[in-house]
Image (cartoon, rainbow, N blue to C red; front, side, top):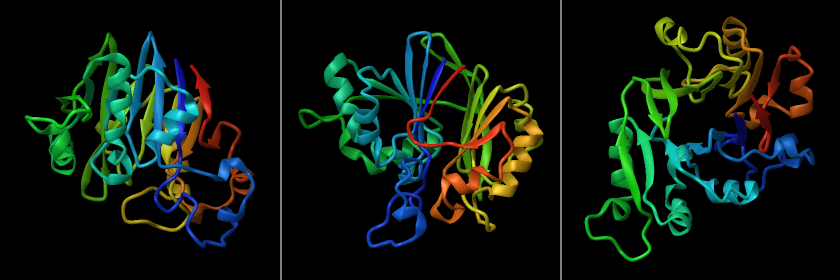
Length: 253
């Protein structure tokens, strides 16, 4: 399995117009974070989790010519706004793009991208195949994917486990029965927004506590805001098996 972190930031973690903070002024490429998303390549399957506003840029940077499916964690714009760009893969493959998400997510996408879901489509409109999922294992081209329900304040969000890899973004709570699904993971990518308490995201300390509880061989933090600080400084505080993720990081498993 090859895991590529396409983006590790949040809407307050990308460069801001006129901002003079240390992160925005940093020349370290690891501080230049697009919105959070991940690509997984396994057994011939090319899969993306979430299509945020930076989806097109992320795909071009990765030079990804094949995309077989998109899986959504939840319906917030910073994870869905790039859906239109799947049209490029429609053109290449001649196939509709399967998109997976809980029914409430697909319903929200249908409202926001009504032209994509229309019965009579304008020529060149993205072609998708919505596939609703519940909190049960499902498979895409023979690859098993296990949803893990977490809470993003009051909004249910799906994380996903694929083999020994687990991706958990946009959360500040996970129930014990859902956490059971994560144990044994070798590579964990986990939300760690900032240092101060937040309504709907883990702080750095909370993420460290959960990462240590899970005990993955390697953990990478994602959905990082400017408030967390500079990559090189934060990493000095972390144990060797826990690192900050950065855009473009590739992990083989």
